[in-house]
Image (tube, rainbow, N blue to C red):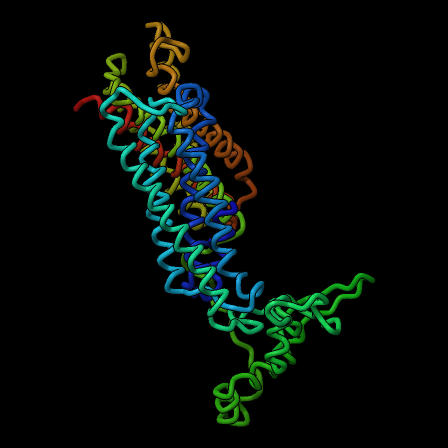
Length: 444
């Protein structure tokens, strides 16, 4: 969720790629990589197998160094002008950024492939570990060089850096109102704050933020934004708008009702948005499980799996996406009878797939292939396919609930159906990847 918060904040702003912003963007990418590798440790067999290996070292440093340290460096470049009154060199800053990014990823990314190498050893005997360790050593020297660039930049800028002024970033929050560096008392007089961007209000008295915002005092009084004041301030703030208004005929200035046009196409309602957020988090979860299986899958032959039989049950799941789409179309047309019929077909196809998976589990257990069996196949296979089967079961419960409540559906009530449809299509798509990796791969 926080990743989407940060990306949404960047999307809603006007990005300027100064050194501080570059470090923030790199932080999001590297922290995400560290988070994805961390989710894998929730799978107990993988956590047990990778304990005290260099895979853990790679994950740990992507979270702490790729996350925390890059935030600190971005903060140094952003707040240095306010603390010292001088700007750090942007040219040296970009050298610092790119060498740090290259050095960090060259140091720790190869360590993800050292799954079998124990940590805290000074040498090794496996020749396959030589290249990743060499790359990590080169990356460490690049990080040291990048740190030297930062230290040099700080010393030079303290002596002869460009004068920053009170607000070098053209920011709108209160701290940038004081001189740089700020005096001990901060403000000679207490500033009046009426909105989230007090410096914008001072710079644009004709269109301050407080006119557009809803405020509630400690006594409970509420101040609503004034549409009239807003429209007048917008006209005053934008000369081109004022000229356009002046050029209108007199009778055109009278407001006339406009017939509302129906919304068409995709509409992101709160229910759909929340479902998409949930799907995005589940995507990371399944990516972790699939990567876990992939790490060990090259050692498997999976001779116990009956691919034609599983393919038949998989077709039932794949077909259920088509029946779900058809059900949604009939609901939008107001045909509840056909909607119920196609929704029931979707539930039947999903249940057919789930029953097929359960019979396969029974066959494997009869052959002594269990989650506690010898080797990694049983552990990784049942973990990956079992979690997917659980998601199918949850989807069947949701679809059954829709069928039970279908007597209340009307045209225009498609939002919950669409949201659950997104989840069902997601479950089908995940099985495409799992079926290809677990079953079809063994044919080659």
